[in-house]
Amino acid sequence: MTAPFVLDSYSLNPELSQLRDSGTSIIWNFEAEKAKRIFANSTVVKDRVRPFSSNYSKIADIAKFRELTDDWDEEGAIAPPENTIASAEALANNLDLTGQKIYHSSPGPNGEILISLRNGQKSLELLVFPSKDPKIVSLSDRETPTQKVLNPENLKASLSWLYA
Amino acid sequence: MEVGNRRVASEESLYRRIYKTPWHKYVNPDNTPTTLNFVPRAKDNGTLSADVASLTTKEVAVMNIDKYALAEVSARDVEEVGLYATHDPCTVETHGFDNPAHALIQGFEEDDYIKPALLARKAKVIYG
Figure (spheres, rainbow over the protein chains, first blue to last red):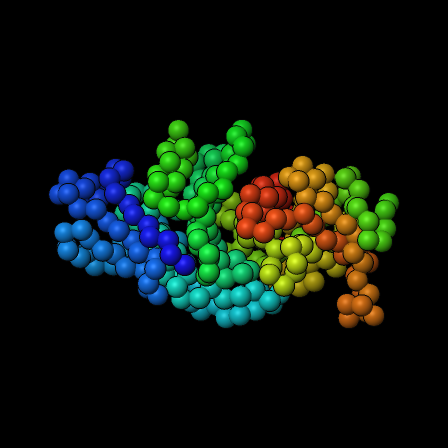
């Protein structure tokens, strides 16, 4: 899977704003076995789950998916592989840095991981897969649902839609 | 009532068994089923198993209340998202077990996650 994921200057999060103001952009690279953060100015911020974050338990849930084994639901579900878990963690941490509250995360029957975001009757479903490009699905009671490849532009537009 | 490998009538309800143990996260915090409960498995050729409510009971359909819950969705809701349900009764001879209520939800397209998501939004956890 090659799905580089870039987050730049749309965050309202003070921590990220500081990076933005310093001319730093954050690049998530999903190509590697383990998702990496690469900073344009070579500054490295240590990966972490912020214990004060409201997303702490959601991100911890994703890490716990490493304990799943094949047939974990006794119906033949495939356990998510490490690269999928790492990508989902990277995405969740990235969302957390932007101040985005994660509603729920869940493993799927084919090794995929779902991260869902909600705002009232609107929801975004971010799907990370073992062997295909990640996807983003938008749903609401009043509008036609959409499915797109999850990339920085589509995520930015979808988050704007979620809060419009 | 239609029987055999034919369409389930729109007036029927369907039970979809979902894995409920808390840390597996198949149920949302608001107790609705997640989309992933309605994503076909690779081995299932693009279909989802369900039971026709009028041909079973919640107790039978859930199989093991300690591990599973039931989500209910109407056949009409299935049709409204562009899918359809057919009767697919299981027998010992063909499946290794008897389940006269078994049905298949069909019409999923590969790589489409909209229909599973819409189905999840219409479904409710009703047992377990």
